[in-house]
Length: 293
Ligand code: NDP
Image 1: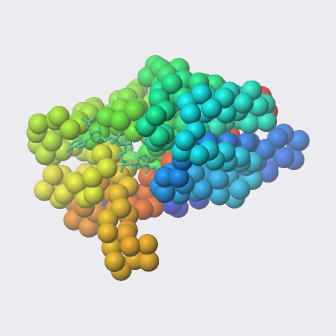
Image 2: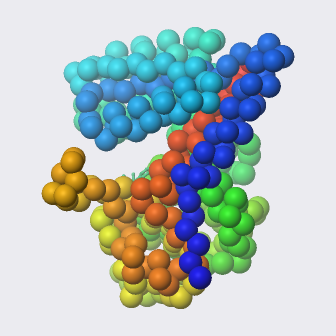
């Protein structure tokens, strides 16, 4: 039997829990968590993601601030905006939506963010703490994946987990977290990337596959074994004239055929995406507590 890991449903539950926490904090005079987001340029997907984050804040009673900057913003101007947020005591946490325009050095920008407000968990200090298993802000997407595995009680202990993709925001932290000595984790992890030679053979040995590469319907049924757990991170637009927008979203997994062989599988949309947002909100609540608000 296949269980759909319903990220939308779990995400609503998490957001209800956070809304209740905000309500209780209000009753005792504590401030609302406040998340800010900086968006540079007018990349369509980035605007959609940031809007979804702002709307989620409004729904659960967080304050939110959206700072929209033009594509031509210089690195120096962006750093100035970040420093303002670092110094603004009303802001508990903030994100700089990636990707940034090519003329801006992403790592330099990430390193300007105060690690105590880095609710995306991308600052090297927070990445280091994550690698050491110390309390920190876990990056939103990997944290959301751990949360959905936990809420569906998916067994990860001693399982062979294959991570496809090694980006700093998904694949690499995911491989660290799945191998750590706590649940969900304690898996034996293989991390793969574009230079991996025998990906199909490796995938056929996997009990859990976490795929984040950004290639529509890349993982097919012949690449997985019966009973596999599939976490599909990919979000890809494919042309579809039957849709008003002219496209639809698909993951990195050929869902219909792979689902038939899976014990658990996340859909796209409605799987990892909503979990990423809820995870960011959880980090913001933690930042609020950390900053003693
Ligand atoms: P990146 O482009 O940064 O990384 C892609 C990774 O896939 C790279 O490590 C690359 O290897 C690897 N790769 C490419 N081709 C192959 C191949 N043929 N075989 C094995 N590995 C391969 O992507 P991201 O991690 O940022 O994002 C991946 C996907 O997840 C995208 O679709 C993105 O939109 C989506 N995403 C979804 C989120 C959500 O909330 N659901 C959040 C973040 C991302 P190499 O390093 O060698 O180049």
